[in-house]
Image 1 (tube, rainbow, N blue to C red):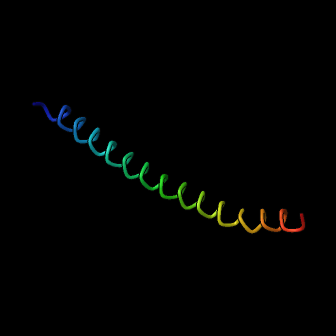
Image 2: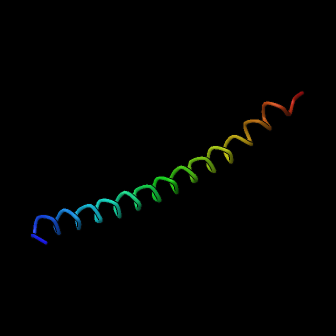
Length: 52
């Protein structure tokens, strides 16, 4: 194998690893955001529904 092919293969593997980490991190951020959204939304719902 010539060096450019091996370099391309390694760079593809590296990009895949980075994308996988990025996906995992973004999933964590999304789950935290949704958890915070629901936790902060529950008191608002209680405040809105409590008088009725």
